[in-house]
Image (cartoon, rainbow, N blue to C red):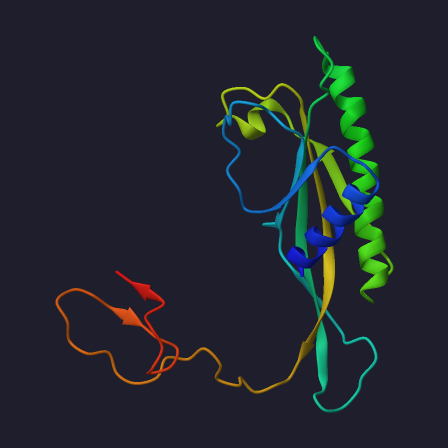
Amino acid sequence: MIFACAQAVAAELAERGFPIGVECGPTRLESRGAFVSRVVFDRDTSPDRFGPPRGVKSNPPKRGTRYLSAKATIWAQCTQPGAIFFEHTRECDRFIDAVFCAIQHWTQASGHDPDFSPSGRYLRAEDFAKIETWPGVVYELTWQIPRVVFAIDYDGSGLLTGTPAATSGVLNVRRNGDDTPEIAT
């Protein structure tokens, strides 16, 4: 769901002409030579919430609603030469508003909870101290995406079939017996 949201936000920001990249994380932001503004979507580490189902239908029955914690970290930099903190913040505020609107559009278009009420904050330099330098500001937008919990049986897709043969430290993992190995170490 977070990946689908990130894709929708990327498409809308590109359509509206915003000069910011969109990634789906987690990602390590290291010195890449040139600093570019970007939004990184990821699962948030705050706890997911669970609630009652919304509208009960049978086959398969809805058992509840799980609210997945998500976040979008916005790395913004004003590209004007000699930009100061205020100018980086002003540029970031534009990105925050655009990302907020794009997430809200995706939320409504995909039939999720229309009560999109995120929270957010600017991060301090100590919050991302692993980076040598970031000539801009960082903002973290957090929200929860409602997801229906169904009572269903696991269909078994992706389970391993057959028994691994004894080898000299090499394990070949296959979905089906005739497939080529997907993972070999």
